[in-house]
Image 1 (cartoon, rainbow, N blue to C red):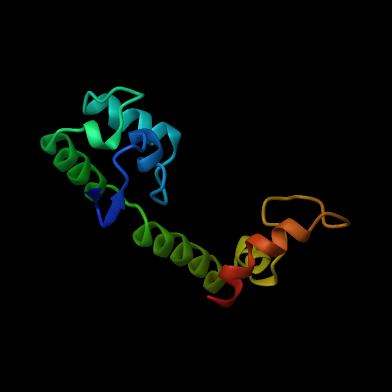
Image 2 (image 1 turned 90 degrees about the horizontal axis):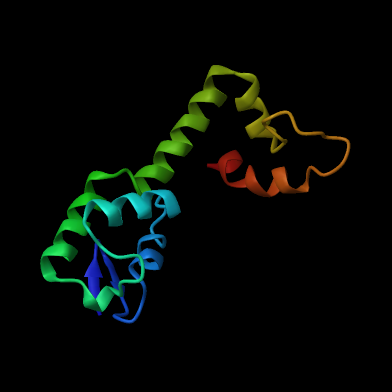
Length: 119
């Protein structure tokens, strides 16, 4: 098991998949991080040297990921609601925010906006 930023990863897991488990780190960020640290696309977590693991941890700690990113998103939505902006009101009502139709197909918006409405 390899310990990266609070998570234990199995040694047989691909580095690309392990990095994408962090909230806020997608395929694009993963590709950039791996290129920056000279890690091959098919490298496994167990094959990384200790220095590479430390460098990965340092890079990830500099990024806004996990709880910090979630908190930032909620703060942005709360700011819109407090301002009384149109987008903030739509978030508060659990309705589509970006101009989608409301006659039908608002179920997805209700699911996505549910967390912010009560938080």
